[in-house]
Structure formats: structure tokens, C-alpha cells
Image (cartoon, rainbow, N blue to C red; front, top):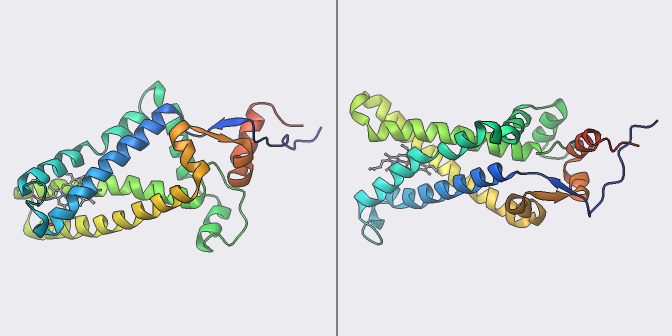
Length: 215
Ligand code: HEM
């Protein structure tokens, strides 16, 4: 008996993101969108009064910021978070081939997992940003409790990460708009087996083995 997987089909679908993951993604995107939109006038003070007064913008920014970790935390808890937790474990696992693929900027061959190294890096950056922006943002808000050098450091890190977040989010949106099947999967949850064979061969093999679809 050979262990080769059966031919991938364009008609057969695979669930890439369940409802919990899709809700967490879009809630997170909305919160990031509001934070980025309010960050612009907070940084370039001259925009104040154009749409909203400064204190209103700062208040929206603060409360949205404090809410930022909530969708991810909820999506990781309880029985509904099984697939999210499984995907977090995948994202934290880096094979030697993936490291090499990353170092050569995609020039070395790779049979990708459910997420390729670029997608894994994007998720890790997003998670780190949430923690760092929450910590530094809280220091900006409750500054009385921190010595001056800490506040200066927090302002610098908050601004530097804000800049990096703008770059990464723009890159993420460009990638999404130019990879229509991936984009569809974060709306509907599904990809075809054909797509998985082209972009996530290791995941396809794993799912076919689970379903007993080896020849
Ligand atoms: C996508 C994430 C975020 C971005 C891009 C962002 C960006 C910014 C920027 C550019 C500023 C202006 C800083 C300056 O004047 O030098 C700012 C201020 C601030 N941010 Fe954020 N931030 C984010 C998340 C957060 C979070 C999670 C919190 C949570 C506590 C937060 C709280 C604050 C506070 C309190 C201020 C000071 C507002 C004021 O001047 O009254 N931010 N943020």
C-alpha cells in the first residue's frame, strides 16, 4: 500500500478558518483600523477639529486600545477555541525548511504548512504589537505612575511600533487583495483542495491522512 495522497480536487473544500477565527480576525481588523485612523490626528496634532476634537479622538483611541486584546483572548478560550489554539501552535512551530525559506525570501523550495512563513511572521508581529501597544499605551495614559525616562521610552516605542504597524498592515492588505482565494477564505472559511495543493501541501497531506484519503 502506498501512502501517496489522492489527487487534490478543485471541487472539494477544506475549512481553513472556522467562524470563531473569522470573527476574531474581523473584530481585530476593525479595532486596528480605528486605532490607526485615530493615531493620525494624535500624531499630527494639526488635524484636530477637522472631524473631531482632540479629547474625543484621544478617548476613542484609548478605549479601542484597551479593547484590542479582547477578540483574540475570547477566540482562544473554551470549547469554541479549539481550532484557534491549534493554529497558534502551528504558527509557533518553525521547521528548518521554513527558516531557510524565510532567510532566502522564498527562493528555496518549501512544501508549506497551513500558513507559510510570511503569514506566520505576520501573525507573530500582530500578537506582539497588541501586547507592546497595550503596555506602552497604558504608560502614556497613566503616566503619573512611571518615572520620566520610562514615559519617554514608552512614547518612543509606541510611535516606532505605530509606524511599523502602518507598513505591515498596508503590506497585509496588498497581499490579501492580490491573493483572491486566500481573501475569500477569511470571509467564507473555505479553500479548495487544489488551492491547498498549490499553497499548503503539508496541510493538505495532513488533512487527507486524517480523513483516511491515502491510496
Ligand atoms: C494599532 C495600534 C496603535 C497605534 C497605531 C497607535 C498609535 C498612536 C500614536 C501615533 C499616538 C500619538 C503619539 C504621539 O503623540 O507621539 C498614540 C497615542 C496614544 N495611544 Fe496609541 N496606538 C495604538 C494602540 C494603542 C493602545 C492598544 C493603547 C492602549 C492603551 C493606546 C493608547 C494611547 C494613548 C493613551 C495615547 C496618548 C493620547 C493622547 O495624546 O492623549 N494606543 N497612539
